[in-house]
Amino acid sequence: MHWNHIVSKIQEISALISIFGNVSLIILIVTKSPRQLGSYKYLMIYISIFEILFSLIDVIIKPIIFSHGSTFICVSTNFALRKDIGIYLLSMFGGFFGSFMGLFALQFMYRYLVACESKTLKTFNDSRIILWMFLPLIFGLLYGLVVLFLFPPNATINHNIKSKMKEEYNWDIDEIAYIGPNLYQFSENGEFQMNFKSLIGILIVWTLVTISFVTVSIFAIKCYSKMHSQMDGSRTLNHLQHQLFYALLSQTLIPFILMHLPVSIIFFATLSNFDLGNSSSIAAISMAMFPALDPLPVILIIKNNRNAVADIVTTSTLTITRRKRIAKNSS
Image (cartoon, rainbow, N blue to C red; front, side, top):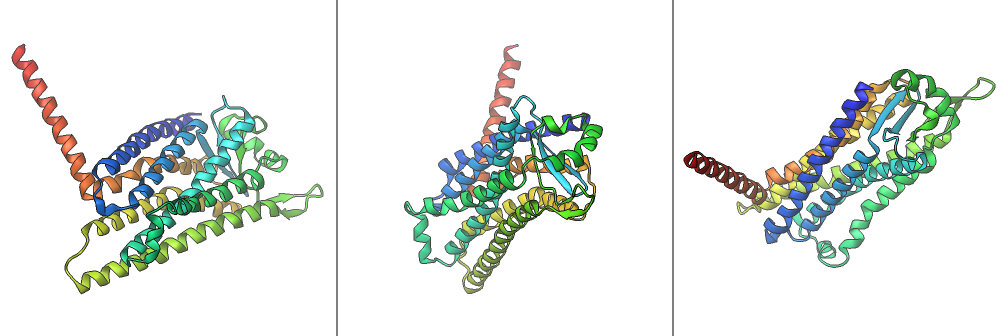
């Protein structure tokens, strides 16, 4: 229970930082963005909104991830929620996870189109940008449906994890909302069986992850090569495009380290029938931290945003110092 309390507090603090950071970033994008940013600012705002919503869902359901043998589950520890509502919210949580994979792939595609001045870029400058924005939603919808229909609570999971959950958290698995795959199970005759429903779900999830990873890798390499060739060909570099590219790289590394890597380790542990126990909830902490940290590269790397923040900090510091001096003199 002490561990659960720590995870819950980190989730709450991360949600507050995420909302503050992403709202601040949206304000900076709207008020301080240079004209050269073009329609990319809409994609950046789009991602910030997703991250705010992700943080809100995270702090509402307060998920704990628990791995035991060939089973891992994501539990909603907000027991004030009805069980069926908790399961739907957990599915939405998974859907947002999938949407982020599509969002980062879309960003790298856009950066490459800008670097090579492709004619396709025109489709981002009018109402057709809405069609592009639907791609991450498709990723998220598929991911959420997989979680809802292929990783639902079932009697096998309840049987396999009931005593361990009671031992670790003193929770009754039959009364809490959770989702998760169970790859291996035993029949009534004691024969070992593969749970193909969970296996299909994991294969679909890994297909989405692979598509995102391959897309990001290909367009990141192409974009870097294009910018590098422009650097060799002339010294008139577009510094903003370089700033955006490196900010995007940082924004991609953060979810890879804090989201994809921990979840992948848990998936492999499940496939290997390796028991991680409640230590697997480190993934719940890292996922909560992701939207809190993700706005920082855009704020710190892009010069306009960095200067705006520096001006605000300087002005605030001078104002506080002036008020202290006036208060001291008056006393």
